[in-house]
Image 1 (cartoon, rainbow, N blue to C red):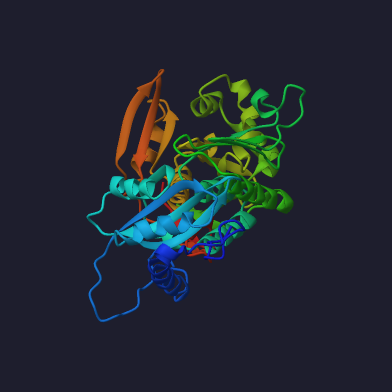
Image 2 (tube, rainbow, N blue to C red):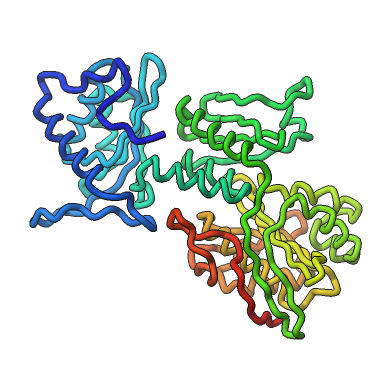
Length: 433
C-alpha cells in the first residue's frame, strides 16, 4: 500500500530504454530527491521545496490513472512524455492487472496545461483508459502515512470504517446493509462473500452484514480491493469499540448532563427512554407508527451506519439521542429528547456536536427530515447559524445545512494524524435553553 519507487515488479524493471535513458534518469533523480528529502506534510499543507535561489511558478495538482502494457519501457515512455511538458511526478503507484498495469500518478503541471492536454500526451505515449481530475494539498501526503492514519482512526473508533474506506478509495458511495437484509445475504441465507465487479465492491462487514462500495466513474483495481479488505479485516479483529471522552454540561437550572458517544450496547437504555416519551415525540422523530420506533434503534446505534451521541443524567439514564447517519453520499442528522427534558438546550448541544463531526468527516452538508410543526428541531437547525435550505418532500420538511461556513467545534482533542477527533473531551460548561 506504499508509493512505488523505481524498483518495480518483475516485467517492469527495465525502465530506461537507450533512446530515453538520459531524460528519464534526470527526471527520476529529480523525483527521488524531492520525494525523500522532506517529511510528510502536516495538516494538509504541501512540503516545502528546496530553495534554489530561483523563483518557481506554482503549478496545478492532478491525479491521473492510465493503463499500459506490462512490458519493459512502458512506464519510461509515460514519464518521458510528462517530462516533455514540464510535469513533475510527485508520487507513483502501480496496480498490476496481469498483462497490463494501471499507473496512478500525482502530478504538478504548469498552470496553463489543461487536463485534456495531459491526457492526450499520456495516450500518445501508450496509455489507455486514462482518467484525470484535479487534486489538492491533502493528496500530497504519501500513501504509507495516509494509510497508517486511516488504520489508527479505525482502531480508535468503529464508526470510522466507512469514512476510512472513502478516504482510501477516493470519491465513491458506501452503503451498509444489515445481515437481516435480503440484499445483505445470498439466496441460501449465508453472508455475502467479498467480491469485486468492476466499479462495485462488496465486502463482508464484521457484524455479518455487507458493505457495498460503488465508484461508477473509475473501476476498482485488485490492489484497491485488497487494501479495502485489509482495512475491514483490521476492524473485525479489533471488535466493537468507542473512543473515550465525554462532556459534562450544566443546565441553566443547575443540573448536570453528560454527553458521550453511544453504540448498540445502549439499545436497552434507549428503549427505556422511548417508553418515557410521548406518542407525539416518537411520531415527530420517526415519522411513522409509534410501535415501529424500537426496531430502528439497533440500526441507528450501529457504528456502520453513522455515529450517535447520548445525553444522560448523573444516574446514567439516557434522556436524549443525536444521530449522524451516512446515507450514501448524503449525511442525515436526527434528534430525540425525552419530553421532560425538552426546551432546555439539550437538542441544540447534540446537534452542534453532530455538525462538528460532519465537518471533520469532510461532509459538504447535512439534512434533517422533520415536520413543520416540530418547532424544536426547526429552531435547533436555525441555531446552527449556517445557510439553510427548506423543501417539502412527501409531506415532510427537509432542512439542509451547508457546512462550508461551519467553524470547527471548540474543545476538540487534536488527533495524532493532524485531523481532529470527533469525540467530546472532558469539560464542563453552562447550557442555556
